Image (cartoon, rainbow, N blue to C red; front, top):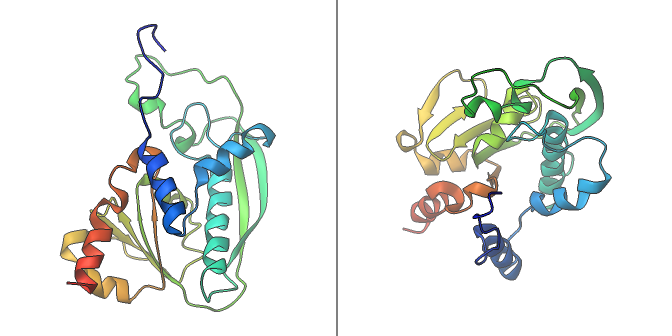
Length: 219
C-alpha cells in the first residue's frame, strides 16, 4: 500500500458485525471466509487465482457440495446429490473466471500471467428422487455454479435472484425483473431458500429480500 495509506482498521466491518450477531442469535449460516482462511496454508491449489475476483472452478465445486451437505443437516432432505470425482488438469489458457480481475484494469497490453492454471471435471451423483426447488438470492458468486452447469444437474428447479433485481430460472432462457414477480407465490414454490453474498456485499444483507419477505407474510 502507498506510504500514506493507513491500513489500521478503525472498527468492525459489516462481516464482523453480521457474523457476531448470527452467532449470538443462533442464525444458521456458513462462514466460508473463516473456512478459507483456515484452509489457506494446507491446500495444493489456490481457492482464488491471483488474477480473479471469483472462486476458481475447483473451489466452486467444493463450495457447492458444502452447501448441499449443510442443507441436508438442517432439513428433511437427507440424500441430496453429491459432487464427487473432482479431477484437475493443467491448462495452457486461463478460464475467464480465473482472470476476470484483469478485464477491469483497462490495460494497454495483455497481462502476462505468472502461475499455472487448472481446469477441473467432476461428477454429480444423485442419491434419491427428492424434488428440491431452490431459491437463491445472491451476487455474481452464485452465477459461477450456473456457468458450468452444476446447479442444473442438482436441483429439480431453481430461481437465481441476482442482487434481488433480476431473476433467472432453470430451463428458462428469459430473465425477469424481480418486482414483476409475485414474491409470495415464488416462495411458496420453493423448498430451500438461501442468501449468499461475498465480503464486499454485506452492507445490505439480502438486498431487500428479507424485509420484503417479512412484509408478505407478516403484513
